[in-house]
Length: 179
Image (cartoon, one colour):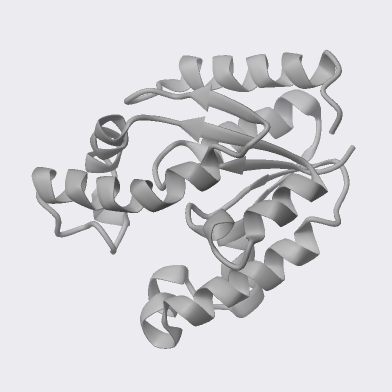
């Protein structure tokens, strides 16, 4: 089976749903952020200030080129990964893309709950966070929407809802989506 790529904005649930989907399908799971941290032996929160965003995005591209050739794997991407260096086309050509979709307001609500662990938004107030999401999504949404599947994830998902999303995706994939 070709790779399954989980894409979407920061905080949309890519890592959680991706891991659960991999479990449902008995596939390997890879989170590109963790993969990059292991490969370069540096946390992304430290990497971005030290090498800059452009160099970080190049690292993401090199890593996803390698991972896109794998079989029997669910890959959760960093939020910006599909949006640089024509990487979305690589994902579309290499496997099945699944976009975890939420409104800007839903994303801001989800991010408010975990912003302490995310340096780029840690110090933003509620309105600043929403504006940050809106600006980013103006550029990213058209790219994300090219995915083969779009799955609405809403404001906040509890464990049961996360499993339900993963199980429904697994059913659709088993029903014959060409992967």
